[in-house]
Length: 190
Image (cartoon, rainbow, N blue to C red; front, side, top):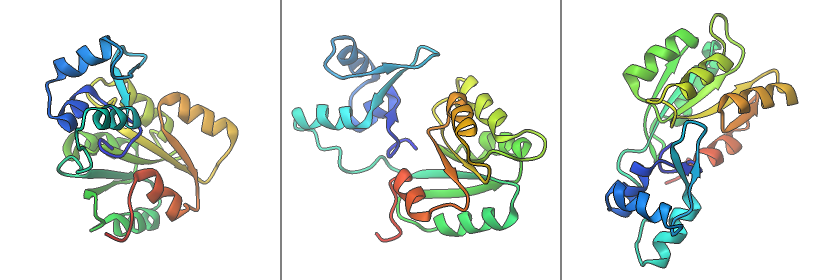
C-alpha cells in the first residue's frame, strides 16, 4: 500500500517529496531522514518520519500519490472473495480490486495485476498463505507488497509464523470491517 502503509520505499519517498532518490538516500545517510534497513539490505522509511521531515521543510505531502491501492484478495472461500471485492469496489483511495482463489492463482495475479496490497488467507489447498507470503518477500520485485493475512485459525503460533514470513497484520475471521479499513487507511465515505 504505497501511500497508506507504515513503510515507504525510497522511490515512493522521492515521489512524495518531488525529489530524486539520490536526495532521499543522501538525507538518510546524513541522518536527516530516519530509515530502517530490511533483511535484504533495502531502505524503508516510516511514513510518519517522512511526514515530519516534509513538514519541517515546508513541503505539503497531504495529497496522495496518484492511483491508489491495488488490492488483491486471495482466499479459497468464494463468498468472502465476493464480499471483499464488493466492499472495496468504488471506495475512494482504491484504484482496483482483483481476486485469486488459491496460492497458484495469487502468483499469476501478482504478475498480471501488480497489487500493492494482498489480503491473504492462510489456509488454502496447495500453496498456503504462509508460502505465498514467503515467496513475495523473497522476490526482490514484489517484496514491497503489503500482506495482510486473514485466518479462521487465529492463534499466537499462526500470527507469529505469518509475521515472520513478512505479513504486516494478521486478522481473525470473520473479519472486522472497520479494523480492515483502518489498517488500509480507507473510509467508505469520501
